[in-house]
Image 1 (cartoon, rainbow, N blue to C red):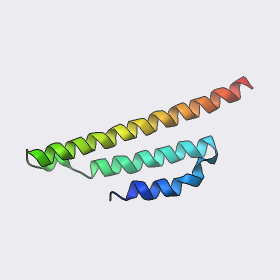
Image 2 (image 1 turned 45 degrees about the vertical axis):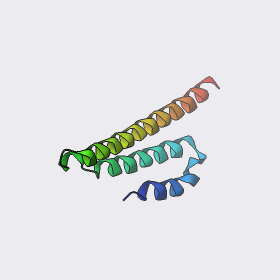
Image 3 (image 1 turned 90 degrees about the vertical axis):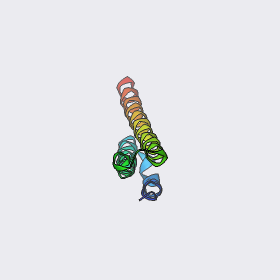
Image 4 (image 1 turned 60 degrees about the vertical axis):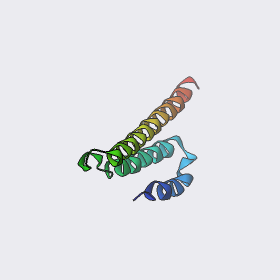
Length: 86
C-alpha cells in the first residue's frame, strides 16, 4: 500500500506537459496520499506509542495532501492569469 504513491509518481511524470494535466496529476497524488493516510486506521489502535506514531504518519500524509492541493491551485491560477494578460 505504501508503494502506491511512488508508482503513481512515476506514472505521472509524462503528465506534467500541460497545466491541466499537471493539475490532474496533483489531484491523483493527493488521492493516493489520502488513501494511504486513511489506511493507517490509527483510531482503532490501543492508546500508546504505536497509536501516536500512526497518528503522526496520518498527519504527515494530510500535510502532503494539503501541499499538493496548494501547488495545484497556484499552478492553475498562475497559468490562467498569464493567459488573461496576453
